[in-house]
Length: 187
Image (tube, rainbow, N blue to C red):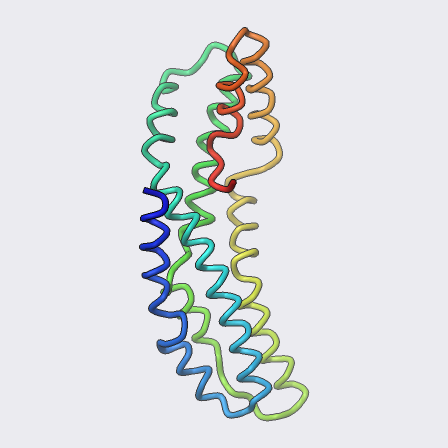
């Protein structure tokens, strides 16, 4: 299911890999240095959005098992350490939703709307460089924003403490490790 979703996401993003309004804007730039800069930025952006879309496909495939796992904990647990671990799981899934939801051609085209030709001078290089930087930093910046909003070290620590608590209470170490790391979309 994950592989199928990743292939579908790659097909959807293939539509904007080398054609579309954004690429037309880049081709319309007649200053070679600016056009090449934009082209490099667009290729980097597309590659990173493709990775994001693949992670989004993995989230879609794992969403039902994640939700089924969390449904077992609808009633609050008596142990506050384990309950904090459950809440960290919920926050991690919210983080994944926020950090993968923008992997699309729509995002790609929105960022390429800024592309324009500037008169050849030093200020033009600066302005074109700003547009380039926004393209190449977009994915990392978006992930940082998602992490600030939905994730943090306290949730990582809560998962680690919950794992230790499960082992201390006599739980299976493999299950305890799954509890701490089973939500990971990356290998």
